Image 1 (tube, rainbow, N blue to C red):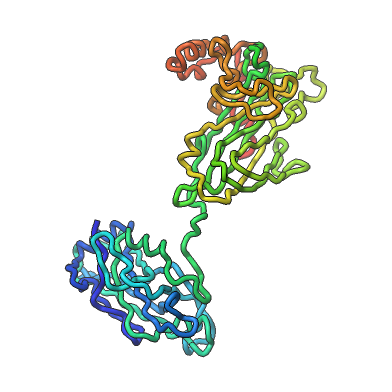
Image 2: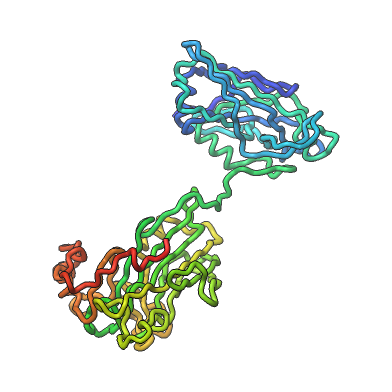
Length: 481
């Protein structure tokens, strides 16, 4: 909430400067002002340097630079306590040979250009073209800067061995004084974003890549999966036991600081197959039409950390994401050897329970127009089944057909005439009905939930009838963590 300001003291032509932070150029400054700046910068004080160099050789009006040998911030408090901060940072570095040294070392640098009147926001109008920021972290242990009696910034620029040519010749200081300012967070961010003068000889850019992933968002949560259960005789009701195919999945999204999506990861498991049919299972995520990217899909046998034969498979992205991790469920999750029962994990006590395959997808997005909030609005996205035996798709309610070879291309409801769905989205610890038990019998409150247009008994899935559901826990089917 406070303004940036230019200091009266400068870094002189000999490369050194002792700068009084209380001596603003036509600007009244005190410790309380610096404390406000410290709070605005999340515990830092940020300075700006005007790089004022000869535009000759590889230095020119568009790109000039100097290097810091040292910088120290000395804070003296009213009670006589003195704090000396000598650890600083900048957003660029270079490997340089100091005059008289035997080898190159890494030094922080300031790079800029000959622009003028860089800032005119937040009430500050300067006649100096600030170019680069210099930062000091002021630890929490340092007292309120409002109690300061003085604050001095001592800067010494590096004398480079210019006989080496570039990069040393570029980072010498040759043309009078370098002005210094103190920045609020808005001006500091604007200057760091602008990055005038770069790239430069030998420059190491420490600014975060705009495409760098800085945070992750998980759907439904970092420690949870969605569980989706299907009735595969659509459009007929069948036995309505909702165990014909059960799949878990979790979507994790890596975003930039600007909340643009750069990485999409999807993990999931085949949990149960209570059907004699075979299925393909897919997950679709709506994205902007211009979205492009590439990545891999891997499939793992139960208990294995190595991908199955033929994986990882390459995946390309153009527009919406529509991946098919599981193909031919009957082959992937087959009945146990020697068992006469076709279904898997849907009977009590027999045959033995089986862990299913795990899949993992990772995609990197090329462009920067996939907004996290737009993507998140589509959660839980579109997990859907293609039933090979009937050529029907089965979706959650109010989704659209996606495969060209599916019947009833205009179908979007995926509920029967009574409003009963053919796919349900559930929490990962849900216990599904055993074979041939209607879900309304196993979960009596479901009927109230559906008949009330999903406004009543919203927790119906927490109240099963004992003995009518499969007591399989997440710890069993989620065999890799």
